[in-house]
Length: 289
Image (cartoon, rainbow, N blue to C red; front, side, top):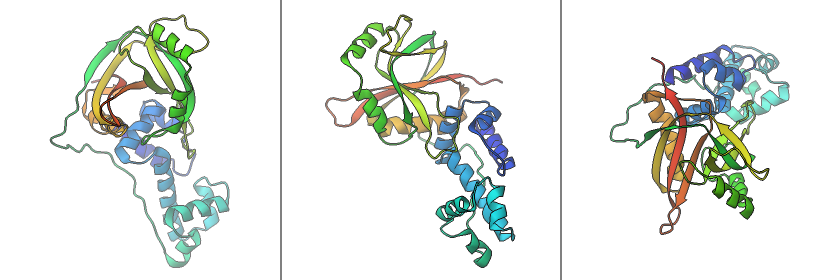
Protein backbone atom coordinates (compact mmCIF):
# COMPACT_ATOMS: atom_id res chain seq x y z
CA UNK A 1 0.00 0.00 0.00
CA UNK A 2 2.90 2.39 0.66
CA UNK A 3 4.07 2.19 -2.94
CA UNK A 4 0.53 2.96 -4.14
CA UNK A 5 0.35 5.96 -1.81
CA UNK A 6 3.66 7.32 -3.03
CA UNK A 7 2.40 6.98 -6.60
CA UNK A 8 -0.70 8.91 -5.56
CA UNK A 9 1.53 11.67 -4.19
CA UNK A 10 3.34 11.91 -7.52
CA UNK A 11 0.01 11.88 -9.38
CA UNK A 12 -1.19 14.80 -7.25
CA UNK A 13 2.06 16.67 -7.87
CA UNK A 14 1.63 16.23 -11.62
CA UNK A 15 -1.93 17.58 -11.48
CA UNK A 16 -1.81 20.44 -8.96
CA UNK A 17 -2.86 22.96 -11.60
CA UNK A 18 -5.65 20.75 -12.96
CA UNK A 19 -8.79 19.07 -11.69
CA UNK A 20 -8.07 16.27 -9.22
CA UNK A 21 -11.04 13.99 -8.54
CA UNK A 22 -11.13 11.24 -5.96
CA UNK A 23 -12.27 8.82 -8.65
CA UNK A 24 -9.16 9.47 -10.73
CA UNK A 25 -6.84 9.27 -7.69
CA UNK A 26 -8.45 6.05 -6.41
CA UNK A 27 -8.34 4.50 -9.89
CA UNK A 28 -4.68 5.45 -10.18
CA UNK A 29 -3.98 3.88 -6.76
CA UNK A 30 -6.00 0.77 -7.57
CA UNK A 31 -8.10 0.92 -4.37
CA UNK A 32 -11.61 2.09 -3.48
CA UNK A 33 -12.08 5.78 -2.76
CA UNK A 34 -13.26 5.14 0.81
CA UNK A 35 -10.30 2.95 1.76
CA UNK A 36 -7.90 5.36 0.07
CA UNK A 37 -9.29 8.12 2.31
CA UNK A 38 -8.93 5.94 5.38
CA UNK A 39 -5.35 4.86 4.65
CA UNK A 40 -4.26 8.38 3.75
CA UNK A 41 -5.84 9.93 6.83
CA UNK A 42 -4.43 7.42 9.31
CA UNK A 43 -0.94 7.51 7.82
CA UNK A 44 -0.69 11.28 7.29
CA UNK A 45 -2.97 12.72 9.97
CA UNK A 46 -4.88 14.79 7.39
CA UNK A 47 -7.53 14.24 4.76
CA UNK A 48 -6.72 14.04 1.07
CA UNK A 49 -8.57 17.30 0.44
CA UNK A 50 -6.52 19.03 3.14
CA UNK A 51 -3.29 17.70 1.64
CA UNK A 52 -4.16 18.81 -1.88
CA UNK A 53 -5.25 22.25 -0.65
CA UNK A 54 -1.98 22.60 1.30
CA UNK A 55 0.11 21.63 -1.71
CA UNK A 56 -1.77 23.93 -4.12
CA UNK A 57 -1.43 26.94 -1.79
CA UNK A 58 2.21 26.15 -1.04
CA UNK A 59 3.01 26.11 -4.76
CA UNK A 60 0.93 29.27 -5.18
CA UNK A 61 3.09 30.91 -2.49
CA UNK A 62 6.23 29.98 -4.45
CA UNK A 63 4.79 31.41 -7.66
CA UNK A 64 3.91 34.68 -5.91
CA UNK A 65 7.49 34.88 -4.61
CA UNK A 66 8.67 34.44 -8.19
CA UNK A 67 6.74 37.53 -9.24
CA UNK A 68 3.55 36.05 -10.74
CA UNK A 69 0.42 38.18 -10.31
CA UNK A 70 -2.22 37.21 -7.75
CA UNK A 71 -4.82 36.86 -10.51
CA UNK A 72 -2.65 34.53 -12.61
CA UNK A 73 -1.81 32.37 -9.60
CA UNK A 74 -5.45 32.16 -8.46
CA UNK A 75 -6.68 30.82 -11.78
CA UNK A 76 -3.62 28.62 -12.28
CA UNK A 77 -4.51 26.58 -9.18
CA UNK A 78 -8.20 26.22 -9.99
CA UNK A 79 -9.84 29.02 -8.00
CA UNK A 80 -12.90 30.46 -9.70
CA UNK A 81 -12.42 33.98 -8.38
CA UNK A 82 -9.72 36.24 -7.00
CA UNK A 83 -11.72 36.74 -3.79
CA UNK A 84 -12.04 32.99 -3.26
CA UNK A 85 -8.30 32.49 -3.66
CA UNK A 86 -7.49 35.43 -1.37
CA UNK A 87 -9.75 34.12 1.40
CA UNK A 88 -8.35 30.59 1.13
CA UNK A 89 -4.75 31.82 1.08
CA UNK A 90 -5.30 34.14 4.06
CA UNK A 91 -6.95 31.36 6.07
CA UNK A 92 -4.12 28.94 5.21
CA UNK A 93 -1.10 31.21 5.66
CA UNK A 94 -2.25 34.03 7.92
CA UNK A 95 -1.39 36.73 5.40
CA UNK A 96 -2.68 38.04 2.07
CA UNK A 97 -1.27 36.97 -1.32
CA UNK A 98 -0.29 40.60 -1.90
CA UNK A 99 1.84 40.44 1.26
CA UNK A 100 3.95 37.74 -0.38
CA UNK A 101 4.67 40.01 -3.31
CA UNK A 102 5.28 43.12 -1.17
CA UNK A 103 7.22 41.70 1.77
CA UNK A 104 8.32 38.20 0.78
CA UNK A 105 6.13 36.60 3.47
CA UNK A 106 6.19 32.87 2.94
CA UNK A 107 4.67 29.61 4.11
CA UNK A 108 5.59 26.29 2.54
CA UNK A 109 4.10 22.80 2.75
CA UNK A 110 6.40 20.13 1.20
CA UNK A 111 5.02 17.04 -0.48
CA UNK A 112 4.65 13.89 1.59
CA UNK A 113 6.59 10.65 1.28
CA UNK A 114 5.36 7.46 2.97
CA UNK A 115 7.78 5.06 4.63
CA UNK A 116 7.40 2.24 7.14
CA UNK A 117 8.44 3.07 10.69
CA UNK A 118 8.82 0.05 12.96
CA UNK A 119 7.65 0.65 16.53
CA UNK A 120 8.91 -2.07 18.85
CA UNK A 121 6.88 -3.54 21.66
CA UNK A 122 3.44 -3.11 20.06
CA UNK A 123 1.47 -5.98 18.60
CA UNK A 124 -1.98 -6.32 17.05
CA UNK A 125 -4.26 -9.27 17.65
CA UNK A 126 -6.14 -10.37 14.55
CA UNK A 127 -7.62 -13.41 12.84
CA UNK A 128 -8.43 -14.19 9.21
CA UNK A 129 -11.98 -15.36 8.47
CA UNK A 130 -13.42 -16.70 5.21
CA UNK A 131 -17.11 -15.88 4.82
CA UNK A 132 -19.69 -16.88 2.21
CA UNK A 133 -21.85 -14.26 0.50
CA UNK A 134 -24.33 -12.57 2.84
CA UNK A 135 -26.52 -9.50 3.22
CA UNK A 136 -26.35 -6.63 5.65
CA UNK A 137 -29.94 -5.87 6.65
CA UNK A 138 -30.87 -2.91 8.84
CA UNK A 139 -31.48 0.83 8.78
CA UNK A 140 -29.19 3.26 7.00
CA UNK A 141 -28.67 6.94 6.22
CA UNK A 142 -26.08 9.31 4.77
CA UNK A 143 -23.83 10.64 7.53
CA UNK A 144 -20.75 12.92 7.60
CA UNK A 145 -17.43 11.09 7.43
CA UNK A 146 -15.76 11.34 10.83
CA UNK A 147 -12.63 9.47 11.93
CA UNK A 148 -12.53 10.62 15.56
CA UNK A 149 -15.06 11.21 18.35
CA UNK A 150 -18.76 10.35 18.53
CA UNK A 151 -20.66 10.81 15.27
CA UNK A 152 -23.95 12.37 16.39
CA UNK A 153 -25.72 11.45 13.15
CA UNK A 154 -24.98 7.77 13.77
CA UNK A 155 -26.32 8.15 17.31
CA UNK A 156 -29.55 9.61 15.86
CA UNK A 157 -29.75 6.72 13.39
CA UNK A 158 -29.51 4.19 16.23
CA UNK A 159 -32.22 6.01 18.16
CA UNK A 160 -34.53 5.90 15.13
CA UNK A 161 -34.70 2.07 14.98
CA UNK A 162 -38.22 0.84 15.83
CA UNK A 163 -39.11 -2.23 17.86
CA UNK A 164 -40.59 -3.81 14.74
CA UNK A 165 -37.30 -3.33 12.89
CA UNK A 166 -35.35 -4.78 15.82
CA UNK A 167 -37.52 -7.91 15.87
CA UNK A 168 -37.14 -8.50 12.14
CA UNK A 169 -33.37 -8.01 12.28
CA UNK A 170 -33.14 -10.49 15.16
CA UNK A 171 -35.23 -13.06 13.23
CA UNK A 172 -33.03 -12.75 10.13
CA UNK A 173 -29.65 -12.91 11.89
CA UNK A 174 -28.05 -16.27 11.05
CA UNK A 175 -24.34 -15.78 10.39
CA UNK A 176 -21.30 -14.80 12.49
CA UNK A 177 -20.88 -12.40 14.16
CA UNK A 178 -24.24 -12.66 15.90
CA UNK A 179 -24.21 -9.02 16.91
CA UNK A 180 -25.73 -5.73 15.81
CA UNK A 181 -23.08 -4.25 13.52
CA UNK A 182 -22.18 -0.85 12.08
CA UNK A 183 -21.26 -0.95 8.37
CA UNK A 184 -19.91 1.92 6.24
CA UNK A 185 -19.90 2.14 2.44
CA UNK A 186 -20.68 4.29 -0.62
CA UNK A 187 -18.60 7.35 0.30
CA UNK A 188 -18.73 10.59 -1.66
CA UNK A 189 -16.41 10.64 -4.65
CA UNK A 190 -16.03 14.42 -4.54
CA UNK A 191 -13.47 14.67 -1.75
CA UNK A 192 -12.76 18.32 -2.58
CA UNK A 193 -15.83 19.17 -0.52
CA UNK A 194 -14.97 20.33 2.98
CA UNK A 195 -17.36 17.68 4.33
CA UNK A 196 -17.78 14.27 2.69
CA UNK A 197 -20.58 11.80 3.38
CA UNK A 198 -20.96 8.03 3.36
CA UNK A 199 -23.80 5.59 4.00
CA UNK A 200 -23.87 4.06 7.47
CA UNK A 201 -25.97 1.00 8.24
CA UNK A 202 -26.88 -0.40 11.64
CA UNK A 203 -28.08 -3.98 11.33
CA UNK A 204 -27.17 -7.66 11.21
CA UNK A 205 -25.65 -10.24 8.88
CA UNK A 206 -27.90 -12.80 7.18
CA UNK A 207 -27.94 -15.24 4.28
CA UNK A 208 -31.70 -14.75 3.94
CA UNK A 209 -33.00 -12.85 0.92
CA UNK A 210 -36.64 -12.38 1.98
CA UNK A 211 -36.58 -9.04 3.79
CA UNK A 212 -39.46 -6.63 4.32
CA UNK A 213 -39.49 -3.04 3.06
CA UNK A 214 -38.86 -1.91 6.66
CA UNK A 215 -35.16 -2.74 6.32
CA UNK A 216 -32.41 -1.85 3.86
CA UNK A 217 -30.44 -4.66 2.22
CA UNK A 218 -26.77 -4.49 1.18
CA UNK A 219 -25.41 -7.65 -0.51
CA UNK A 220 -21.78 -8.63 0.08
CA UNK A 221 -19.92 -11.19 -2.01
CA UNK A 222 -17.97 -14.07 -0.47
CA UNK A 223 -14.54 -12.84 0.59
CA UNK A 224 -11.80 -12.86 3.23
CA UNK A 225 -11.98 -10.72 6.36
CA UNK A 226 -9.26 -9.57 8.75
CA UNK A 227 -10.83 -9.31 12.21
CA UNK A 228 -9.33 -7.10 14.93
CA UNK A 229 -10.66 -7.50 18.49
CA UNK A 230 -10.05 -4.64 20.92
CA UNK A 231 -11.10 -3.71 24.44
CA UNK A 232 -10.89 -0.43 26.32
CA UNK A 233 -12.39 3.06 26.66
CA UNK A 234 -15.06 3.68 24.00
CA UNK A 235 -14.91 5.11 21.33
CA UNK A 236 -11.16 5.89 21.67
CA UNK A 237 -9.95 2.27 21.64
CA UNK A 238 -12.08 1.35 18.62
CA UNK A 239 -10.89 4.37 16.63
CA UNK A 240 -7.27 3.91 17.70
CA UNK A 241 -7.40 0.28 16.56
CA UNK A 242 -8.80 1.41 13.20
CA UNK A 243 -5.93 3.88 12.90
CA UNK A 244 -3.35 1.19 13.68
CA UNK A 245 -4.90 -1.20 11.15
CA UNK A 246 -4.32 1.32 8.37
CA UNK A 247 -1.07 2.85 9.58
CA UNK A 248 0.74 -0.24 10.95
CA UNK A 249 -0.90 -3.55 10.05
CA UNK A 250 -1.84 -3.06 6.39
CA UNK A 251 1.52 -1.62 5.22
CA UNK A 252 3.45 -4.53 6.74
CA UNK A 253 0.99 -7.40 6.17
CA UNK A 254 0.49 -9.77 3.24
CA UNK A 255 -3.02 -8.39 2.71
CA UNK A 256 -4.64 -5.44 0.97
CA UNK A 257 -8.12 -3.94 1.35
CA UNK A 258 -10.78 -4.70 -1.27
CA UNK A 259 -13.81 -2.67 -2.29
CA UNK A 260 -16.48 -3.91 0.11
CA UNK A 261 -18.07 -2.47 3.27
CA UNK A 262 -16.06 -2.71 6.46
CA UNK A 263 -18.01 -3.20 9.67
CA UNK A 264 -17.68 -3.39 13.42
CA UNK A 265 -19.67 -4.22 16.51
CA UNK A 266 -19.34 -3.00 20.08
CA UNK A 267 -20.49 -4.55 23.37
CA UNK A 268 -20.52 -2.04 26.20
CA UNK A 269 -19.29 -3.22 29.62
CA UNK A 270 -22.14 -2.94 32.14
CA UNK A 271 -19.70 -2.76 35.06
CA UNK A 272 -17.34 -0.08 33.70
CA UNK A 273 -18.50 3.27 32.33
CA UNK A 274 -17.59 3.98 28.68
CA UNK A 275 -15.65 0.69 28.44
CA UNK A 276 -16.31 -1.80 25.67
CA UNK A 277 -15.23 -4.86 23.68
CA UNK A 278 -15.28 -4.29 19.92
CA UNK A 279 -14.34 -6.09 16.73
CA UNK A 280 -13.42 -4.44 13.42
CA UNK A 281 -13.93 -6.52 10.26
CA UNK A 282 -11.93 -5.39 7.21
CA UNK A 283 -12.47 -7.02 3.76
CA UNK A 284 -9.07 -8.09 2.37
CA UNK A 285 -7.26 -10.27 -0.12
CA UNK A 286 -3.73 -11.61 -0.36
CA UNK A 287 -1.35 -9.24 -2.11
CA UNK A 288 -0.21 -10.35 -5.55
CA UNK A 289 3.41 -11.47 -5.61
